[in-house]
Length: 298
Image 1: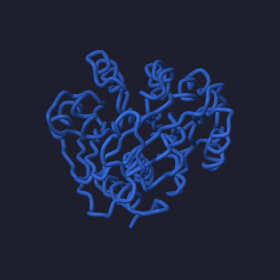
Image 2: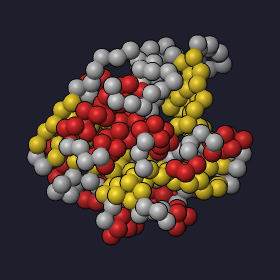
Image 3: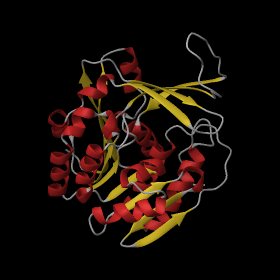
């Protein structure tokens, strides 16, 4: 198989985005919202869209259902940058509700994501410089094989980036122990502020980064995405911060996944960590403030 710069392995599904929703409706009632969008979603799917827009030499591998939503999903990403694995389950769909504050609420039916597994995916993975493991908590069968996967990528000499998302049920002690077991193999931990604080059991981003960074390889980077405040990163004991520009928000769903793609794209272009952080913030800020979304550096 032809090598790629970036391999994306994880959850690609359909997003139905509705809003803005000011408050959750009472049971038995109906609420109208002005906006609706139907598009590719999931941590891996959003990153794949951004990579296609940025021109990254990337390949995304995920399952998909053999149904009408699955047929639609197959047609939304460049075929030369996507490897679809058929699943007997219905295509996964997420209902994403936007709120006036800019926050979002997600309700997901796992569907085909439940069947994505390491045995099925491994023969379809080309050699890569970097791999992004996205949406671990929405791909439970694949997640069970993370220890074997991480060993495989280490043996291949492939750097690993991880964005696991928010776990259904929250960060229990058992789950924290599981995730911390992955970190010695992770070169780029790309998580948001809430995830970092709960994983590290620390009250703020700086303290969380200082707690998590020693668990990564010596050259590993912890990146904590802070929404409108930008990002905080730590590598080799040094703290880096990159503020975000003020933009008019149109759609923030997938902002962090877009950020991941732009950050990894910049690193693959040989850019320094500060420059990669700045590029990623600019790309994500442009994406969430344009419709249709634009994945460009401004």
